[in-house]
Amino acid sequence: MHMQPEIPNVGAPDPELKTSPILDNDEEETLDSELEADVCYFNAVAFPIGQYVRSGSEILHCVERGVWVRQGEIEV
Image (cartoon, rainbow, N blue to C red; front, side, top):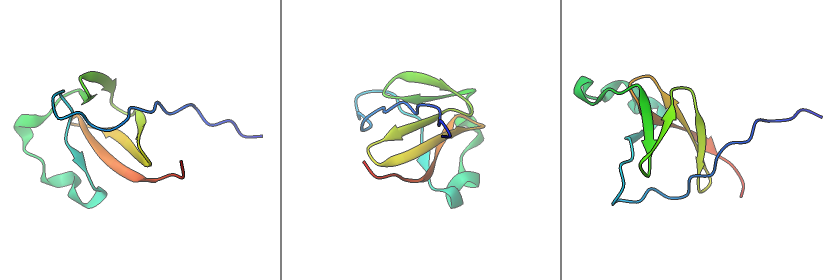
């Protein structure tokens, strides 16, 4: 049986806390360079580049420049 690494469930973004931009795959190249970072934030928690998280039913991937990119949805 193939074991998948556990993806942290971060819940919904809290507008009061720092969360990096969440983009769709086709939006990835439209970000201002001044927003670049070496981590992604979700509700004021820093995640390293390459980290996947789950927000509700969405899977988000932290990519270069410190932005989240939607990777699709999962059944919850």
